Image (cartoon, rainbow, N blue to C red):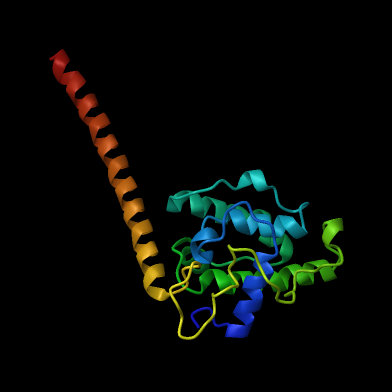
Length: 201
């Protein structure tokens, strides 16, 4: 496994995430969590006092995703006694296989430790700590159903490597197209600035 987790650990992880109410439909865990918004929601579900959801805006561009993750690193994860590396953040932003699962597994452990050390927890979940919960049937959209089944199927959650690579390629292409558009706009502005002095001559 790219995440370094066993199939059983991954299944428990997906089931845990499935039981947390999130603001987006569950499609592909790597892409869904890439901009850090859902990470903030997961932490806010258990510890609303240490995360401010308005600091994290939905993003398609890598710079905005990076901004969200840097904010998470310095304002929230630091309080949990942990920070992720630049390489880990880059892997998550690029939706590389296994990166978000490894991060969420570590996050689960850090949140449980934080709670055990007396961290302020939401009263409604005071008796429901972050460690994995028992599997149960989920509604149509979930990360846990069909996510782990050797050999990996082409599933609604998109965990087959080919589909994931295609999505990553599409996202890279979108980022490049956006960069090209920004550069074109910059060139047009510079051409206008050059043209104005010529008109005065």
